[in-house]
Amino acid sequence: MPEGDTVWLATKRLHDALAGAELVRSDFRVPRLATADLTGRTVTESIARGKHLLTRISGGLTLHTHLRMDGAWRVFPTGQPWRGGPAFQIRVVLSTARYDAVGYRLPVVELVRTADEARVVGHLGPDLLGDDWSADEAERRLRADPDRELGDALLDQRNLAGIGNMYMTELCFLAGVSPWTPVAAVPDLRAIVDDAHRLLRLGVETGRQVTTGDPRPGRQHWVYGRGRRPCRRCGTPVRAAEIGAPPQARLTYWCPTCQPRPA
Image 1 (spheres, rainbow, N blue to C red):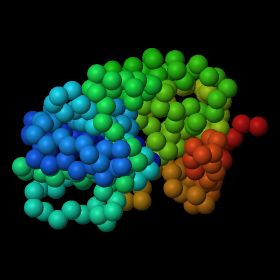
Image 2: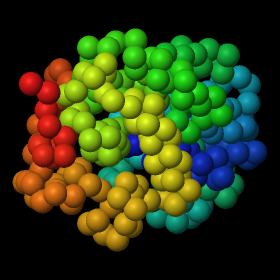
Image 3: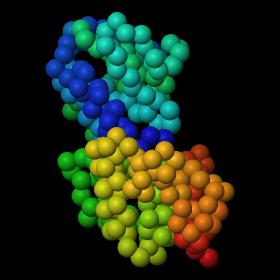
């Protein structure tokens, strides 16, 4: 699942291409919006809210999309071939005189009144990349369920919005605790919250998701994706297991030496 910085950057590309321009074409390839037509309306802005994309359109409408596991927005200059997947994977096309914005494999596509955006994003916790970011509120929400496993709590967008499986895994490593540690047993929960904010901001600023400080290929992460390979810190083989209950379970990685699981 894309991380919050990936979604933020995708939203910025949409905003830069579409904001302030009139739509000369809209094509919704999802059944309930098959007859919707936004031609002639102006895109006012695109913003990210956690992992949700909100594209606001004149007349009081918002296009709400979510990438989930493998959705993507691609932007192409008018006349350039579209390269993002086969045509049957396209769910939305928004075109201006200069650009085509094409949404591939989007599992969530809906039009809502801009005044009703809270219906689709109002449940989210503080946005790690938003103007409303509050570390105090994020920490408060995490502590509200002290027996919950840390990894599961960090992935819950109602606590803080923007963390995906990769950042969750790396944050736990940086804190020296396993993802299965109860929130109440985490020595410094605030440091994890602050690290989350720092790393996602760095991802937006650099366009790279680096947690080790080393941007070279294959060296960006401490344990994520390194199952059975040596821990970068101590050399112990990294382990992998699922965290959370199906169908929301996620495969996570940890070093049993640097991050011992609670008994």
